[in-house]
Image (cartoon, rainbow, N blue to C red; front, side, top):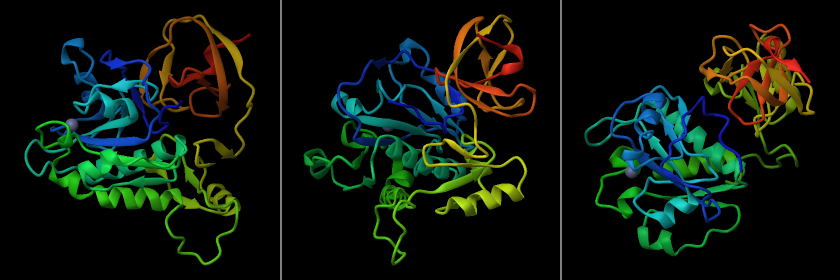
Amino acid sequence: MSNSPLASITMISPNKNSPRTHAIDRITIHCFVGQVTAKRGLEVFQPTSKQASCNYVVGKDGDIGLCVEEKDRSWCSSNAANDHRAITIETACDTTHPYTVTAKAYAALVDLCEDICRRNGKTKLIWLGDKAKTLAYTPAPGEMVMTVHCWFANKACPGKYLLDRHPEIAAEVTRRLGSAPAPAPTPDPGTSHLYRVRKAWTDSKSQIGAFKVLDNAKALADKNPGFAVFDETGKQVYPEAAPATPYRVQVTISDLYIRSEPRMGSAAKGFIAPGIYTIIEERPGDGSASGWGKLKSGAGWIALDYARKL
Ligand SMILES: [Zn+2]
């Protein structure tokens, strides 16, 4: 089970059950009740005394943080049965009714829901709008069902702003997943997914285009230095990222940053401890002549100039 490549910061909360006991077939969107960054949101769930967490935090600027890995159950919706099968998302919002969310946070939330559905093999996000109906519903294998916190506790969560947008979120995500009635009369078989042109997969805001036809995406990337083409799983397909074979490296220095993206200046996630690590992907990027290596742990990228290949 993977975590979202859209998350640019990770701070794992101790408030969780590991692993979850039910397959993922729900998404529960919450309102954080505060216009926080993803980082600040994650910090709030770090103390054991908080006795709460979520899988993801969406910050006011559209940044996304990983708080509890998808394989684990977060403590978020006042309902264990729900949280064992749901990916829970706390979204930055105003502190008062209707708990309005910024446009950037809303866009990131929809992107995140799409990504969660894709990686978990879902083709449809469903909002039934009714507690009894939803809890009685058994989703088909490709279906992800939305639930809300206020069904399980005497709370306003997710707040009027987000609650009103649940039908829109479900429809938009389902449309992107390609299972809504196709507007095109004869979609080519095998091209129902999109190739996205971005600087980095995790930098969704840098996206300048999305294409069904790979050649069109490549052409746009060629015209824009620094841009690459990614498939729906986040794999860079052009220019080809090499090598695909994992290998081990030794890090001996103690001040090598883990970066959220394969370049200097991207968000640092602390120093990597000296030791031996497995690299699963290489990319060229500013600040390391030998390129950047993606850590198998999913923690991020390190400059290969400062790691010795074993
Ligand atoms: Zn909530």
